Length: 133
Image (cartoon, rainbow, N blue to C red; front, top):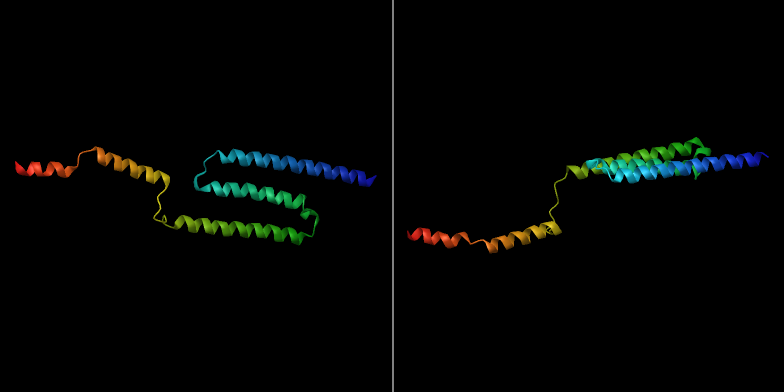
């Protein structure tokens, strides 16, 4: 009889976890439509970390394991966040890298400028005529 109630408790726990993961997925999709500026990646990683923690705690039974394993898991997430934070700070502090390759928009702008230059009369054609007067 106790195994039946235990099974029922797990079903309720798994259903609640599923609901939480679905809500967090909906929040992730909704957040993708909001422009947070440079914090977009931070928001996405924060939501993904909550989802990963939920999966690890419930489906990997980390909540039922020794507490030291939960501490190790949590500290690894914290240090990963710190590491990614320093990487983002470092990347934001650098100048734009010039690779010599133009983006598609830059190529289109350059082509448009060439067309305009061909259509307009060159300035040096008028300069000699002005000198003759």
